[in-house]
Length: 403
Ligand SMILES: *Cc1c(COP(=O)(O)O)cnc(C)c1O
Image 1 (cartoon, rainbow, N blue to C red):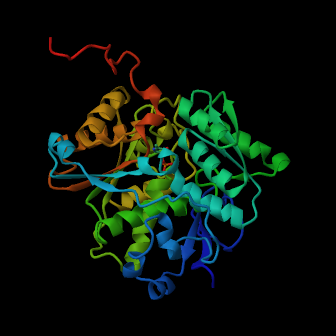
Image 2 (image 1 turned 120 degrees about the vertical axis):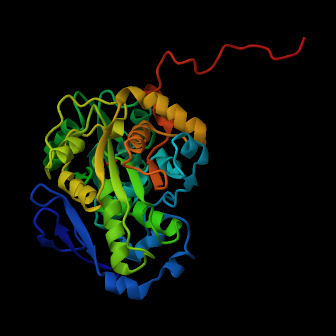
Image 3 (image 1 turned 30 degrees about the horizontal axis):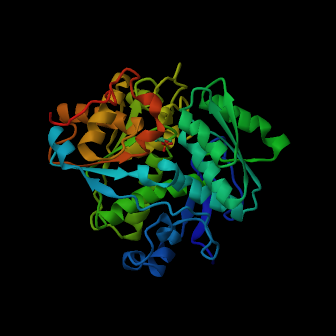
């Protein structure tokens, strides 16, 4: 056996699918990767993992790439968990942690999913990739495709942040601006599949990006000494991070690596201008409807329809969590307030989480004594558009010399 994957499993109806081959979706819905956890428990321990290099490949036994295959890597993973006492104090919290994913390759946590998905695609013989992107996914895919020497096609909405438009170009991909949203871009990928013979790398439309994102959950556990925080806030678009983290926690529980089985509450945060999961959660539904006129400056959250909606909602409910929308108008302010109180480059998606956090502290849902962890999923400097243009950012020159 060269990997611990036993099989794949359709998320919608449990259909068993063979490992070791290319998969898209099943029944129009995502696919889980399943492992022989008893064999992993016998093969490796947390102590052994602790001796490995600080990147996501340290969890090799819990990843789908066969052990003898070289991954396509840019050194992704093991982002720091930073204690933020100044910000905690201003929010009246005892302890606030930020897992800072802005430090990953291409400046966002998308590199986790892409590292694993592109590694698997290369291993399984893919020569050409295509994907829609709301922002960071395109640049990240292009970077890993460049590293793997695989052709890459990227489709993005016309108003995608400028830096995200530059990235695919920089990394040698073919990029197209689309008059529409990410689901319209996704249709172009689907429609071109037969003629172009590309592999669809869209969020949750192949099984392995999810496995890469799962490592966020593995890292939190390891970094906190094999225990988990009380509350996790996560900015939710397509949902791979949320779903992946919850999968990681279940696998760790079954492996017996956690010192306590107490699970964190997952708070899925969306921007009020595009909040399909919040809407479905509040309606008590397991599936979301297409969110009309989706608009938000937090481009990573601009996903009006997600194929993994029910997987997100299942995870939120199982964790006794919530889905909550943050206010659009406060995004720029929160970016500055949190960045200036922490030194962390906070992206607009995470700014939304802080608006939600403040609301939940005020209404008592999050207690002062709760250990809260917020994901900073990307770097602020990728979003010049998010700061108000009339903001006095840099003042006109003046002399400070004493006369
Ligand atoms: C893609 C993205 C998100 C949303 O992530 P999902 O796991 O797909 O829900 C959040 N923040 C940033 C910066 C992103 O690029």
